[in-house]
Amino acid sequence: MGTTPAHSKGFIVLLALMMSLVALAVDAMLPALVTIAEDFNLSPATQVQWTITGLFVGLSIGQLIYGPWSDAVGRKRPIYLGFGLFILGSILCIVADSFVWFIAGRVLQGMGAAAPRVITMALVRDQLKGAAMARVMSVIFSVFIVVPIIAPALGQLVMSIAHWRWIFGVLLLMAVVTALWFGFFQEETLVPEKRRPLTLNSFVDSLKVLMNERAALAYTFVSGLIFGAFMGYLNSAPLLFIQLYHQGSNFALLFALAAGSIGVASLVNGRWVIRIGMRKMIHIALWCLLSLSVLFVGVLISTNGVPSLFLLMVYMMPAFFCIGILFGNLNSLAMEPLGAIAGMGSAFVAFISTLVGIPIGSLIGFSFNFTCYPIVLGFLLVALVSLIVIRLFDHPQKAEVA
Image (cartoon, rainbow, N blue to C red; front, side):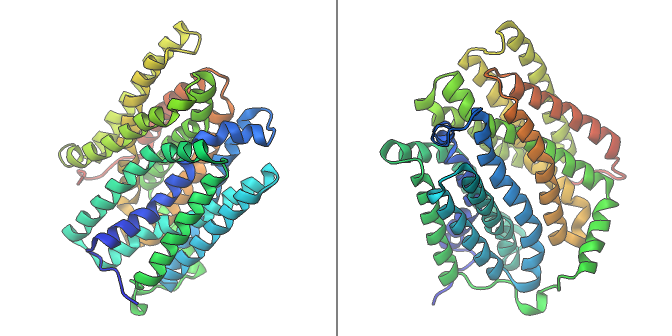
C-alpha cells in the first residue's frame, strides 16, 4: 500500500476533493429544487428550502465534533466515519419516499461532509509549515473556489439525461471514490505522541477562553450573519432565477457569475489584505455591501421589487465580491486570539457561526415572495448589524498584524 506525499499533485487533488464535498452537496442540487418541490407535492414551494437548511444543520453538529475528536484519536478514523455518514445520507436521499426521510438524508450528508471539510486543513498542518503549507493550501483553495461555479452545471447536466435523484448518485460515487483513495493511499498524519486527550475539562476550558475573547465572539457572530445572508440566497436562488425570471436553462450560468465574484474576491483579498489589513478590509466590504443594498432598494421600489435580470446581476456581482472579501477575513480574525486552543477554537467558531447563520438564512428563504426584496433587505440588514457589532465589541489594543 503506497502513500500520497504531502507535496504531490495527488495529495492536493485528494484534499481538494474532500473539501469540495460540502459545496457539491449544496450547489449541484440547486437546479433540482423546483422539481423536488413538485415531486414531493410541497406547498408552499418554499418548504423545499429545508433541503439546504437540513444539510447545514448536520454540518454545524459535525463541525463541533470532528475537530477535537481528530486531535485525540488521529485524523483517519473521524474521516472514515464522516464518509460513511455521507454515503448513508446519499443513499437515503436516493430512495426516500417522503420529504421527511429526504431531509433526514440531507442532515446525515451534512454531518458526514463536516469531517473531511474540517480535518483537511489539519492534514496539511500535520505535514507542512511555513511557505510550503501556504503554497499547498493556496492550490487547494483555488480548486475549492471553482467547485461552486461548476456544481450547478453538473446538476443540470445530470437532470438533462436522468432523474434528479441521480444527482445524489453522483455525490455517492464521488464520496466512495474519494474515501477509497484516502483509505488506501493516505497515511495517518497525527502521530500518537502529538495527540491530545479529549476531556470534558479541556472542552469547558476552551469554551471559557472563547467566551472571554470579545473580539473573537464578535467576529464569529458577524461571520454567522454573513453566512446567513449567503444561505438565504442559496435557499432562494432556484425560485428566483427559475420561477421568477424563467431562466431555468441559464440557471447554472447565472449562479456561476455570482459564485465567480466570490472566487475573484478571494484571490484579490490575498494581495490587498497584506497592505490594508484584515479589519480595514472588513469595514470597507461591509460599507460597500450596505451602500450597494441601500441603493438597490431604491431600484426595487421603482420596479415593484422585480428589476430587470440585468440590473439584478449588476447588483449581485459586486455584492458577492464583498461577501467573498468578508468570508476569509472574518474567520481569520475570529481565530486570531485563539492560538492556544486552535483546534477546539476552530470547531467552536465554525459551530457558532453556522448556528447563527441557519435561522437567518431560513428566514430570508422562507420570506421569498416572488420579488427581490427578501434577499436585498437581508444583505442590507446583516451588513448594518455587522458594522454595529464590530464597532461595539472589537477594540484592538495594538496595531493589527494582517
